[in-house]
Image 1 (tube, rainbow, N blue to C red):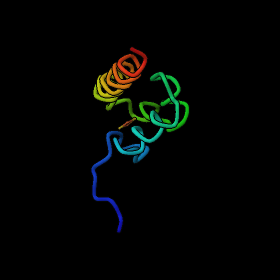
Image 2 (tube, helix red, strand yellow; image 1 turned 180 degrees about the horizontal axis):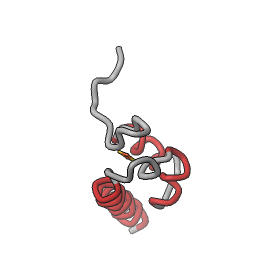
Image 3 (spheres, protein in one colour; image 1 turned 90 degrees about the horizontal axis):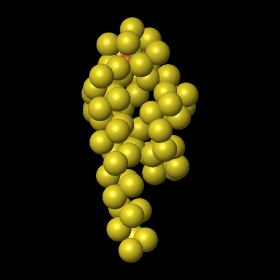
Image 4 (cartoon, helix red, strand yellow; image 1 turned 60 degrees about the vertical axis):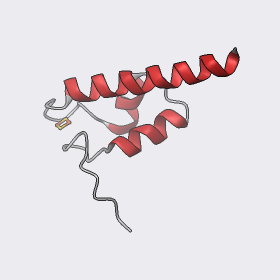
Length: 70
Ligand code: FES
């Protein structure tokens, strides 16, 4: 079944789920996400939302890794 999730970046069609998968696979910065998906490189209209959202998800990942190391 095809996902009906609206993309975070309409120019590239990149969804939050796609970015989460990339983060789970080891992407650790906004730059890596941009290089892998092209988000923010079209009209630029998603810059703020994508940057804010990716930073939030990377911080969550860091907290999980930190708590696992304790
Ligand atoms: S909506 Fe992401 S670059 Fe245009």
